[in-house]
Image 1 (cartoon, rainbow, N blue to C red):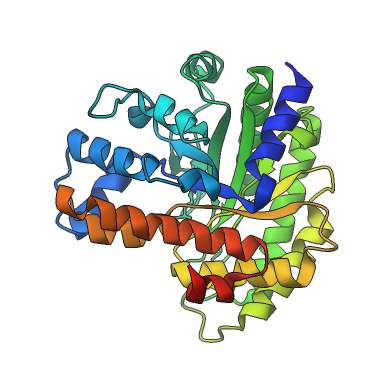
Image 2 (image 1 turned 180 degrees about the vertical axis):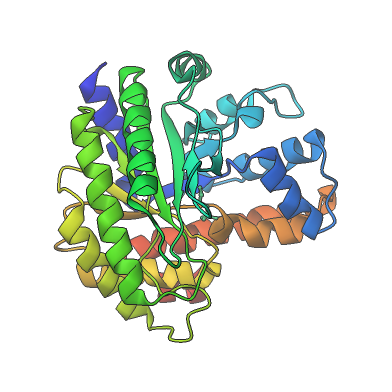
Length: 340
Ligand code: 13P
């Protein structure tokens, strides 16, 4: 393991106010999103869509890294260039999703545990060979009546830490994603309590597995009320509660916190990221960045609709969303909406 390379890559992923484009939807998830818009659910449509994303002119000015799915990292552009190569040429760091999905957890009704540790060492070596410099593993934590259980949080945190250790051994920066889901009617206070417990457990496990904190990126959900909670709160309140929770539970050695969007409308995700940077950038020890999928891609997908003729307009929408989130990192999001 070259520690300095890991540190340099982790820092590069959150440098210059840029963020990560998550475009690693599994084929079933990508197909679901295509189906809703009447886009054919074929390998070639997924390939064409991902080619459109990564060839957006100027994307590398706002996007530092792009997370791919196994199918995509093996695909080529129409002109024969490997997708990973096209990403590198755009000045973007290629990354890869390496978990094999969140599965029902035995003995824990309503809860999931993420799998994918079997053969992970070999898979990481192959992905590194294909150009990947970082990886992602997503654990999901469900807030409900009696959940999350201690067993679920500990099993997921342990798997995240074993994944992270294997990544660093292979020279890949692990993105550690313990997603506390927004689904449900829980309050902001309950989300904060659960998120703090999850983060503390994850960092205990990372310590036990001897993961170097300077060489990873944390990818959490923002602390919000559940999506069906009757009591929603202001953007500033989400920023304050998220930061209070993270300042208590995320060590200062971590270079970056790159939020997921989790199904929030894109503009709301940007506004909340903006508020965190306006209110906390000067005292947060880590960069407050983004690693959004839906909040960056959704408008582009809705414009593309599987039609070549719409590709340019879709790329413009993607670029706009990426620029807005870069502006949010600078605490300059409102100006960006009007000015870009
Ligand atoms: P969303 O931003 O759509 O939540 O996706 C982020 C992600 O990569 C989930 O694993």
